[in-house]
Image (cartoon, rainbow, N blue to C red):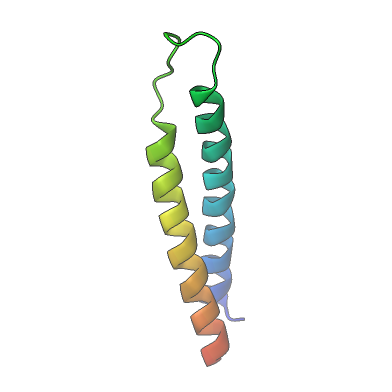
Length: 69
């Protein structure tokens, strides 16, 4: 792996970790005991965009790695 694909893989790992955290927080938000205690963070949107960045970065890193450049 070259330097650019390594960076893309690290970005993908961080974005996918953020997506996992956002999914967990969204799950907790949907199953809260007090329905009116809603926080300010839109966890569903955070999950979606983090997953999008993670998948695109990871697929680009793999494509570059397989191409040898």
